Each structure stands twice: as C-alpha cells, then as structure tokens.
Image (cartoon, rainbow, N blue to C red):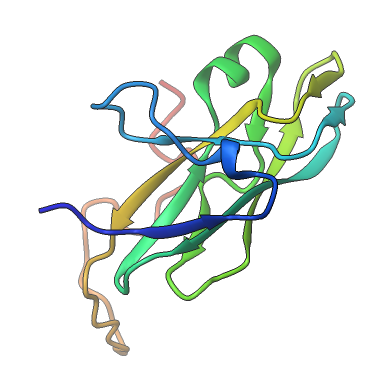
Length: 146
C-alpha cells in the first residue's frame, strides 16, 4: 500500500519538484533552487524549494548522488540527513566538496537524492546491565583491516 507524502514547492520553484528517473528507483532526485559554487573543501547549504508533510512514523533521508560522488567528489556532509515528520521548513542540503576542483551548480541541477522510510515502533528501555555478545565492546576497526 502506498504511503501518501504531501509536499509543496516555494513560489517560483514548481519546476524543481522531486522526481524519480525510473519508476523503480528507490530515491527521488532533489534539485537546487539557487546556483552555487563549491571550492575544494567548501561546505554549502543548498535550498531545494521543497516543503514536506511526512506521515507520523516516517522520515525522509537525504543522501549523496553516486555520480556526483564518483565523478566530482561531492557528498552530503551529514549523510544521510534526516528530515523528521514534524518538520515543515524548506528542505536544504549540506553539500561538501571533497575534491581538488571547484564545482559549480546551476539552478535545477540534481544535487542529492531523498528516500522515504517507515520507522519501526521502538521501546527504548533503560537497564543496569546489557547481555554479553560475541563482539562485546569491540569497535572502530577491532575486527582488523581486511
């Protein structure tokens, strides 16, 4: 059963509505509503003109586009960026240029992608001790480099 997600675009940005390149794509392309220049190492907040009304129990995740990451070293800095169901402000994307060359975006360029996710119902229970596991507290490379 399809989930209904209501959205609106800011005036003058109706042509930038999220879209999928293919019907079976997991994510909707997000476009910048303003041009931007990202020098190497720069971080910029790009507005999309998109406002969402997600149903309770859902989130939108903003993720990098693989082509921009591979070809131009552009990523979403807080990936995945989470948009909560109660947020009604404009969706904006924090882009980071990890490359050596400056990258220019024009209005309407696809700069990120958005996945809508249903969240599980979770009861977070405070306890005094946790059960043991095979891994234990090992993390941050504790299983080796390969």
